[in-house]
Image (tube, rainbow over all chains, first blue to last red; front, top):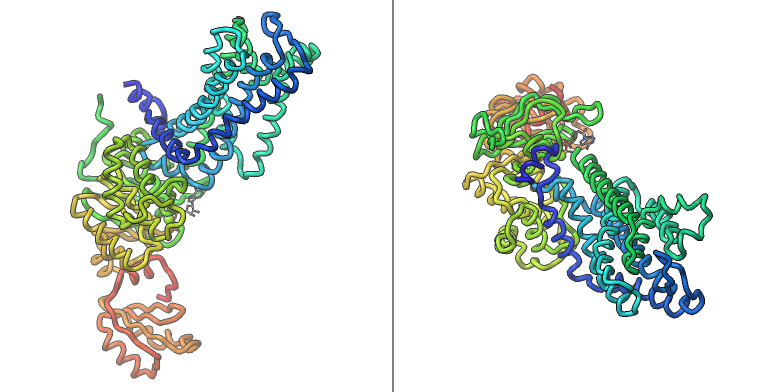
Length: 268
Length: 316
Ligand SMILES: Nc1ncnc2c1ncn2[C@@H]1O[C@H](COP(=O)(O)OP(=O)(O)OP(=O)(O)O)[C@@H](O)[C@H]1O
Ligand SMILES: [Mg+2]
């Protein structure tokens, strides 16, 4: 009923309610490349261990959410979770999507079936979220095993990681539809790198002078980091509602923009 | 629920009136009227850029019309795109198989896009691979297949949803003669089962073999319409006399014999004389001292109609 209603409202049949079929394609494609899945998970874990062994002994205690004293690794771990969710999502929705859109004509083939641009956008973004989710579960388990979570609220790290994935996958896929050649991916990398470094990932936002803090707070990853860090130590804050809202808004805007672009590019 | 606007003659699979497709300011399809009836094989002929694929894409509901009326299976593509696409099969001009999947997976995954069950697409894939004679390549990736094999797979893929209407944009381009005949046989079989076929082709023999009715397009417009036989009767003569000359000797020969035929046509490599009686015309040409290296008298074909209508090398 809802699907029938959506069909009537959305112009030119943009949604058929079948993004699962698009996800299924990805599952088939990747069923034989599970080694890639392993490496995607191993990377952040190696980071964690490096921080534990290396920085842990140099940096000492850091002030975390709610004024708690944290070891440096406990401080960084939730941020790394957010950053790896971001990186995974961007990785999955940029080059592979660009290739399928511009060269392999995978979406053209899909659009000849009842599927519409919204099914494609939602299906591809969902796949990135699913894949990121697998890494995130493993990451949270490792965090717990290393004694880096201080509260049962940490189970909420998982939905939070999925939300971060969703937000960045949506935006990443939307951006990919604007790129015209593979070399332009450098622009995306150019944006992602500073996000990774300056989103209160490695030091608290209070380190920055008052005048540039707003810059950090504009970073979408910052909102992911804040959310994760609060959940990891078990400190809830009204600000988290804002963090969630920002990420949800990015997800929605990215999804809408992606659908529109696919329609504009392929349904000419 | 209102029934998606099913109206008009229920036997019309496609009906377009004053249909227009513009890209920027340019009209690729410039006001055509077409009606395709249930169960028929309908052809679009025309030179490169005539607007055949643009028309096919509008009918396939992947390209909104710029102007005019269009109904496919009684529905409006602008409103009911997904419902229409669920019931048609599309073979695009250029293959877009999924290179990341095997032959079998291409069929299965494509079937899933239609919402068909896993069990159904599993069985269907086996059946379609047999149809395309690709069973022995079932679990191979698609990329190493030959061009003709890919074409066959694309055609098989378009049948995964048991379509009532198939849109085939140059289906046999790139197929060897054997594969082409095989495909003609299969298409004929589908037609016998009541499937409506819309075909574009540059192969006049194919059009003559397959199509009950066809239109010739040129510059976005329809310039002729009818059955192959009626088009030949209307736009050509019963027989054609072909004269081949030694290289360089053809120039100037046209004017010597043009009055012997109803119409003549100078192609780069031969002279065509359209006449009711080829034998008599040949004798008359000999009498005037023409000495071609070879001659051929044959029946008119769609090729001749096409040449005349699209003005290709016309020396009328
Ligand atoms: N997406 C597009 N954007 C702009 N112009 C287009 C587009 N698609 C087609 N055209 C133009 O529309 C005209 C008709 O093209 P179309 O592909 O329909 O021809 P066709 O009859 O299928 O030709 P062919 O026999 O070469 O396949 C051409 O001039 C082409 O350049
Ligand atoms: Mg074409």
